[in-house]
Amino acid sequence: MPGWPEAVKEQQRHWLGRSDGASIRFEVKGARGTVEVFTTRPDTLWGATFLVLAPEHPFVAEIANDEVKAYVREASRKSAIERQAGKTGVFTGRYAVNPATGEQIPIWVADYVLMGYGTGAIMAVPAHDQRDFEFARQFGLEIRVVIEPPGHPIDPAKMTAAVPHEGVAVRSGPLDGLPPEKAIPAAVRWLEEKDLGKGEIAWRIRDWLVSRQRYWGTPIPVVHCAKCGAVPVPEKDLPVVLPKGVDFTPTGKSPLASVPSFVKAACPKCGGKAERETDTLDTFTDSSWYFFRYLAPRDEKKLFDRKDAERWFPIDQYIGGIEHARGHLLYCRFLTMFLKDIGLSPVEEPVERLFTQGMICKVAYRCEEHKWIHERDVLRDGPEPKCRHCGRVVTARVYKMSKTKKNVTSPTEHLEEVGVDASRLYTLFIGPPEIDAEWNDDAVRGPFKFLCRLWESAHRGREHVLAYRSGGASGDRDLRRKTHQTIAAVTADLEGFGFNTAIARLMELGNAIREKDGDPATGEALWAMAFLLAPQAPHIAEELHALFGGTGSIFKAGWPTADPAVAAEDSIEIPVQINGKLRGRVTVPAGASEDEIKRAARAVLEPQLAVVKEIVVPGRLVNFVVKNK
Image (cartoon, rainbow, N blue to C red):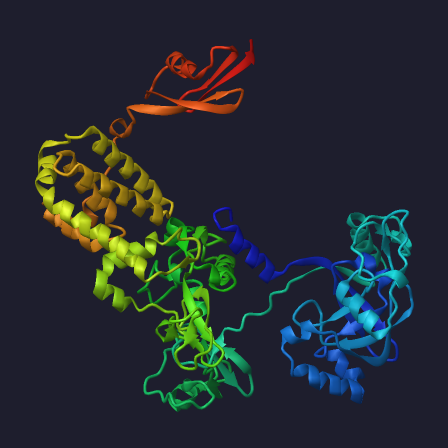
């Protein structure tokens, strides 16, 4: 997806968490079955000196003694973050067999191993994994080095940390002497030949829980029958419609469960009594394919027509916040792939280009006593800001706007003070739209003043606008040039989401109009300004359009086109270099020939310098290669 920001793609790669490696089976002494381990470094199997199971691993229940059971109960009370922070564990009293060495290795249960990745069991290679190293040191377990730089043996007793996977395999049987890039595939082949494991790909991502105990959502079309189990509702009976007269009193169950007429159903398979599913689909499910439904919003027989999808998809440009990188922006890809698999979507990827806007941020204030406080509750009558309620010192930091941190700006206040257009202009002008921006309540007055000055210029120059519209362009050459340059630049800015730079250019044109107040060229400039301003400040743009004699909406009146001949500069400034170093600048007519540029540039040369070579990049620079006389 070349049109997607790399930051979004990187988040999605991490969330998916693809890992190439191998699954390896470890027999357990005195127990039935085996423990399966996934590892990205099967070449280090010869250095595995113990196994570690997650407390939730199903094998733990089979081998647990009272001490292990108590440890599992304690681990269940911790969050995943808390479990990763420490290194606690308990020996199960059982041993597994290392399939590479035939040695018996102890089996431990430790809370730093999670069921959410791999198999919930790891082969611990403490010499080459820092977590395993710390665990081994803490509990006195063996550390065996199986990768070393050639000619530089490592003594495990002297190690202070795990050593990196750099060097060649040692004490690793058939892998000895191989670097990792050769040892890893060789280890996979060895495991498969010995029927001890196989090459495999593991993913960090897990199943997506899409059911919710809410009324507002798409009913899940499933009925539950005591005889047949969960049975899908036949297509002829779709859609399942949300009932009315629902009691929303909280009960811990879905509100739909309180409507007997909805719950009671007949089993589509056996015709017996059944109950309808009362959970609804999460709204993320619907929002992951809504753009396809736009093709046929009123079609009650099918989701959409494939021919329409072939015409409109993939979407050329999509706009969404980067905070959805691992949510909507990922799941919409999944759903589109699913629709492609069942023959509905003509594309596998729904969006060609993605633009992610930044967040609007503002200073938030916090004191220890009252937590987050409003800015109005900050006292500034001393060397440090203090809380109005408790008098403690307040800390200030910029966060994205949120009700929790009480740093939200109410748009109503600004709309009443400066109007919608000025508020829109400030929001767009605050910075590049793809990065976070800090809101400043006072700064919104800047765009408001710009609009006020433009309004005054429009009324003073109205007759010039009418004259321009009826008789063509005339007046000051510099202002006309500025107008057409602005048309070209703003058009390019808007196409590239450069709203802040587009507004800056309009402000520059507004200044130029005021400087040439009374000149006929202000008519063409003001007429163009109304159109160029319309996307960012639509209300005043419509008023200006009407003031200047336009009919209907300005948004149906076209878009101005820049005339390259008018926009062209009469003269250009060219840097002059001597032996690659800047020595001055000269002004020449636009379109000057190389000879004309050289003659002008020679004025920068000092008499004692002998020119060996003259290099001219038309319109860009002149470089003289010289040597001293």
